[in-house]
Image 1 (cartoon, rainbow, N blue to C red):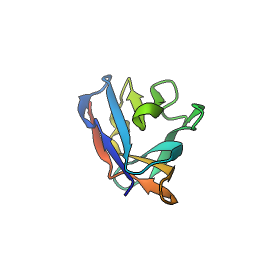
Image 2 (cartoon, rainbow, N blue to C red; image 1 turned 135 degrees about the vertical axis):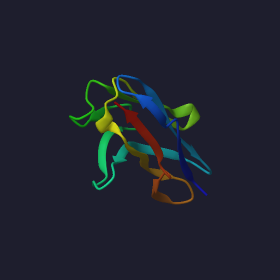
Image 3 (cartoon, rainbow, N blue to C red; image 1 turned 45 degrees about the horizontal axis):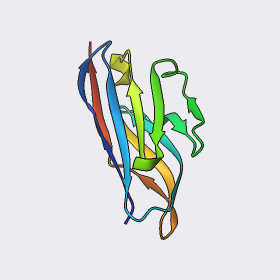
Image 4 (cartoon, rainbow, N blue to C red; image 1 turned 90 degrees about the horizontal axis):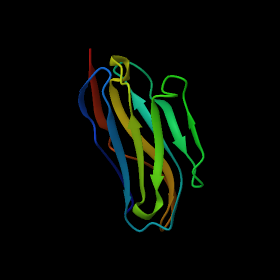
Length: 118
């Protein structure tokens, strides 16, 4: 059973930083691209950062220059370093990706809450 588990969310003041982790566990053969999404109350879930298996990255305009996505393939973990946080970054953050285990499937984590106070 493959799982993605996010951690690292919390409450932070505007201007502060947090680092989120997305750890994949289970019978994993390979992990393709992993994306970080977020969903604020009353809004659609949006893709904010993605990293390929080779390490190429892309960001939404709303986080470019402030957030950094990285991965540690040895640990099957993807990180999202979030700096210069703003109240509008408040949301539940999810990771998502295609993982090869017994099957090649798409997985979502359960989400981690990030709250930025002004």
